[in-house]
Length: 367
Image (cartoon, rainbow, N blue to C red):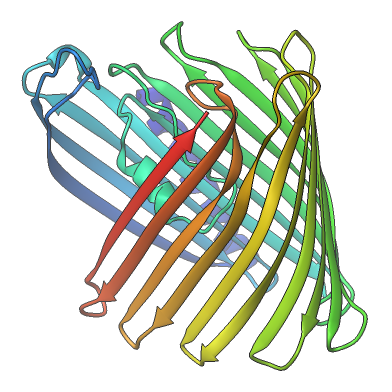
């Protein structure tokens, strides 16, 4: 811990000095909190439930650097969890986030990000934050950990974007996902995911969007795999409020071992409609068909519907979705799944410095 704090202090000094030297605007936001938490089943054991009180103290900060054509945000929130009854689980938790971007010219942009979490808490606040996150990189772990075993999760991304019009761009990037568990029975993994995509408007009314992903999954216990995914979408804009699209997704999963390879075909159609300036609707409906090399096919409905409403001091989003997913890079490698999920998020800003939010999520998963 002392070594880590030393590194952070040195990094802060370097960044602050760099900001002064290069004329960047620097901001530093410290924070602290003390949380009381009660759990009725501390080890998530369906046969032997034990309750406990936790006291969690945290001291953290966000350091921001902003220049004319670049910016950086670095956040770090270490915390210590004290268990009243099962004090063998007392431990440090670490959560850190880095966001950096640079736009050296009118047409080019670089972005780098990294999200790090080390904790023993299966349903930590960081995990709950993923439910509310709009960042698709931060994937919620739908599997259930047992006990209070420490785990480390890290997601790093780099992306280069070339823009050649008001809405036209082509981009290339790389994502690295790491899952490391202290418990030997839980799955450790590393994913390497290069990708490329584009958005191109032929004219003000019609556009073509596409993306291709290759992922190599490297697992300690389960079979490694190569995964190829492609998406192509044609979009038509009727007016400034209404647009419709037709989309096709294709996936091929190729395992190195004895696991069964498969393809997934998924056509869909949808629309986005800004009912009012502060009220928007998204609807997508489709059908997926999984075709494995051996065994029965799996198929079903896929789609989503979301309604977003904005007020001067509040916002509300309600989402319903369903389809297929793959449980990779989590505490358990459970493979292909069908799921249905509903969620709602409400935020309210009471004053300039005080805000609150309420969120709920319900998910049904069929493996």
